[in-house]
Image 1: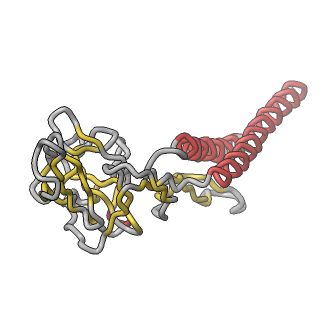
Image 2 (image 1 turned 30 degrees about the vertical axis):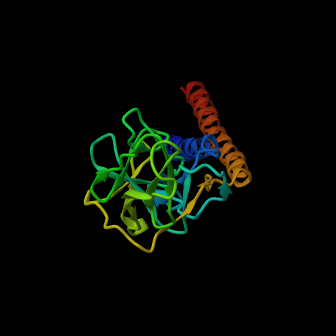
Length: 249
C-alpha cells in the first residue's frame, strides 16, 4: 500500500509542476521576446526487494526553447527585434550583465535607453544615453543615432550616440533568472558578436505555441487525475485490508 502511495505521489507532483510551467507559458503567450520553459522529469527505478516494477518520477531538468518567435513590424523607432540567434545585453537588477530578446525599448527620465521592464540597455561603455529633442534611429548592427529636430540643429546632422551590445553565447551556457532575464552560467559577460543583427522598427513575439500548450495542459491534467485515482485506490485497499484484519482478530 505504501509503495503505491509513494509512486503515485511522485507522479502527481511532477504532473502538477509541469502544469505550472505550461501555465506560465500560456500567461506569457503575448509577452515580447518571451522564451518558452519546459519542466522535464524522468523515471527512476525503485531499488529493493521484489520485482523491479516500480519507478519514481523525479525532477530532471528545466529546458528553455530558444527557437525564434514571429516578427511584427511596428514602425516605432525604438522597437527592435533580434534576427535569428542572439541577445540584447542589459543591466540586471543585481548589477550584472544579462540578456533579453524583448526589444520594445524606451527612455527613462534621464534619457537612458531601457527595456519596457526597466532594465538599462548596455552599449560599448555602459548604458546608452539619448539626447532630448532628437529623432532616434537604430541600425541593424545596433548603432544608435540621433537626428536633431527642427530648431535643434541641422536636419541632415546625424550623430552616433552609442551601439547596443549584441551577443550570442552558447545556449547551453545561459541560465534564466527569476526576473526573466538570461545570464551566463559562470557569470562572465559574453563578448559582443558582430554577426548578430537587429530588425529595426519591429518586435519579436513569444515563441509559445498556444495550441500546443493547451493540448499539453489537457494531457497533464489527465495524467494528474490518473495519479490521484491511484492514490484513492491505495486508500481503498488500505481500508479493506484493515477491515479484514479486524474481522480475523
